[in-house]
Length: 382
Length: 135
Image (cartoon, rainbow over all chains, first blue to last red):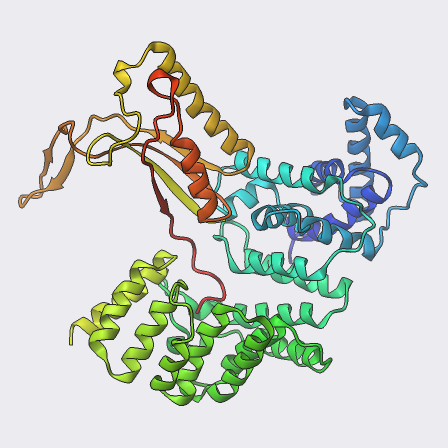
């Protein structure tokens, strides 16, 4: 049985506790610090002396920490006035206040890296050290990044509604990038996206959740024990997590039924078609291309155009794929790798080997470089 | 969020710079001014939340390889003409443009006569982790 007072139980309470403090008149930056202090205190004292109401306890302790900070702070008088003028909201906090913490942490004035860092601390409730480890930077650097981000948003009105799309982009970044230290960022992104979906109904948030679930389902098959990548077509599909696939498909179908399609729903639809194929050869590529057409019409994204060329190659043959590729910006990072694949499929092995070697030099991860180098080596042996 | 290495070289095969009087011919004050600039640059990176690492290397050292008996053999210390790594900053920034901007600033560290040295710096991207959706 899991320890009821471990981090995983505490962390989901963080944004709503910050929301309560801000609603009571604390500024966001000070509230966030006070809640982190309260978390440290909780981890220290709860095992011996567990509270009956964890959230109420956190609110009380964080509020006390905040007041201590106000009393010792230079801006004491101004802050006390702000606090005194406040009507004194209860400890419960509203879903809207929690949602506003999501908005604030993904504020468009922040750079993507800052929004990600702030979201992981103030929404996910991670410590600065955990965030620093996830992105392989020194803790002091991450502390500075977070404190700058807090300063950037501290002047923003808490009551102004935010944009769900900016929050989704940040959560997608959390899911997609970062190294895994002791925190599983992908699982964390899924947790936060579930929470966002429960706070504000929107088919695109469900689309993002479905996309994450469908990719997460494949994770056990994506990496070999030595850390090298296994391409989708070669993955052992028995390793895919069928429960996650089912949930992803259910969430996606409910979202699509609402007829307000967006980028994440369309990407999830493509991921669902892959998840649905018992073998790579049985993938419904014709339908994949149709979803890519819709995604391209919606976004005009060069990366979508590139991925569409791969799908066209599978659906209509290598020649058609290369024709589709001719319309894609050759400066895109994976352009050369796609070109290599399609040339091999067409039977031009010499060109494919050369293109794989060029693609390896342009890879953005060591795992991808190794994979592409081995593709070139395989063809050069013939 | 990508990381870049900004690499400084000891004068060797690197292209000539605008103000390339060797450091041992500067005044002590000019050396101090240079060191202060480098120090401030690092501190500013820290304050911006972009700092990962900074190191300086001695020009001493050698090339090493294992020979046919499995023993290490060395080549060096190096002649002054060789292009050697002098040190580096590792930065974690929003992208290539920011890395280039930072290296451009660093290149303007003061040298002889208190004027910028305009040295050539090498900027190299790190490999990142494979993305979660990239299969």
